[in-house]
Image (tube, rainbow, N blue to C red; front, side, top):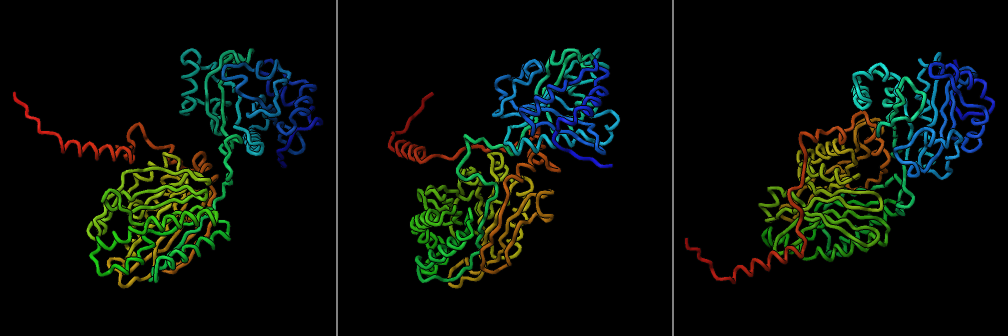
Length: 531
């Protein structure tokens, strides 16, 4: 037996007519006249498919393109086909409308309908259409009409309590029922003239009007595994950063990723000071380092995830990661979960804002080291549309690193995103609390057929300075979310639990207002209440 799926040809009409007569013998025996088939093949030849078995056409699907907003959800089959003339076909239409799909009864065990649906889906993707719409019969409804409404019948078919030869098949091919249509196909006595309005969405559709300058789904990451060593001055340290920016730029990377506290070698000049004072001296140059990294992002045309640096704001010490976009703009993220070590040695405090950032390569999230061990943060970012999570980290021992690594891998799986971790390696004498480091930087993926079997896209050599360059495909995340073996984000029981942000970050204006109110309160006389 030889089976072939191909576009329909005029010479196939004799086989087509024979199959139609067999298929529709129970509902009047109507069939499409040859002149109408010829018209479809003239106005939209790429949209008409057939399946040939041993040289004979035994299955067929017919379709037109429509601008769906011209019809809306309350249309009939007669209206959508232009009174069966197909004059409603619009070569610039944004939806594929299925007007016919059938399989000769003698060949239904071969699952040929699935081949036709797959051909339609591939056509949608190649033409960049929003998806497929169709009106579907519910031929078994006549058996249950006395006890179930059409909506109740459809619900039971969805739950697999009832089998419907048409609707069950369509649901198994990723269509969903948008609404119930009444009087859709006059003469369909088996469905009592009810029909389902079916929709399949093309997850690869790109709205050309909203298309951004950089829309390639393949994103190249340059993840730096940074060697801790002494630099004679800040200029030398920034020259090393520029070396990595230059290197990844030669490979056309979209992101350069640096680790947590990559600039702490500069603390060597303050080693005679207590830890809290030394790191505050380092925080004094954060603005200068930030300015230089922003310049590098522009000059080397690469988005830079600038590791993290200490920052003093309103007298409080934060651990802050920066995103420097290649268009010159930048964002900051303040580490939320401060480790006991950071509190004890430096007196750091945590930030209050959880936010995904827009880039020309999709939405990204930033978490710093310990933060990735708290799954709530990345789940909130995933709900905001994050596709890549960047985690600059710094760990001294292998077990500390293992915590970060394993939690990062879990975040990639549970949030259906990529996670890139960047760490420091080597020793740093004469810098208190920054003496030894262990790291193996890596890029992790979800775990499904589209990705590596071990869910590791790439990883560096442990404890060796290097830059890891690898590509990630954002379209695979979309495919996973819609068609994965498991669909974690979709299958959450949000009726039972949820993860929410309790408060939003205060703006600088709000902070100043709060401080001014506090000062005002100090100057007011006490109020004595007498009962």
